[in-house]
Image (cartoon, rainbow, N blue to C red; front, side):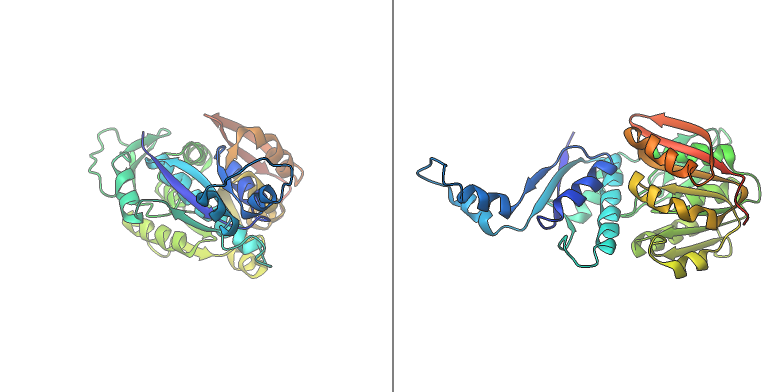
Length: 326
């Protein structure tokens, strides 16, 4: 398998938050380069050396960087999109810019080459009992009666290949009822909300912190012949933007959020503003080690857990809220 080097530029103060975000999306190995560490090395008077290589001396003025290696396939593409989304969210929370520019850059490969390389691994995929996810550049003829969802993720998360997306789609298929109103928080490519319409939802609202994701989701909705009357998309962060929360409104039958544990926990007090009494909440993007944290945070808001599904280190959970008065 080929691997692509991805560099995230931050500050010494930003190392821990950046690494926390990486762990949250399942990236467990990374390399840290920090000028402060090297400065401490140079100032260590107990060191015994006669010569320091020029390359090491150049670290004195380097920009702090966290480096990860992602597989050059569709899973890697999804992880890169999730990583970028997490850095955008972290930057939005970093009001004093203490964490630096949080830029995500690929090393030794052009963006266009990366996009074309991983496409060869993205093939039609059956999910659940009713759906087949088809990339827009692949041909597919359905002979099994499945509903075809055509997706072009561009640089947004959501090809359907990632376990978190598949788990979430399975729970949507199981819990969605004909005519439901659906809210997709952290929509990425729009795959979850588009699937909801194709499975019978009357209309959906999609939200993402990235404007690029919002535009991609709208384009993918159009690819699936979903009208603008059925598909509304907003850009913003519901955790910090009360005006956006009001604009989204309430009375949704089903909410789906495929993000990361920390963000889901931070969102948990807001779910009751959106979901109607007896509605369903589906959360995914959770590494299994943190599933209990998310479950307890949501249960503390009055929700009852319906089902926990796990696959290859990832978890998705469905809940019902009978206490909500919306």
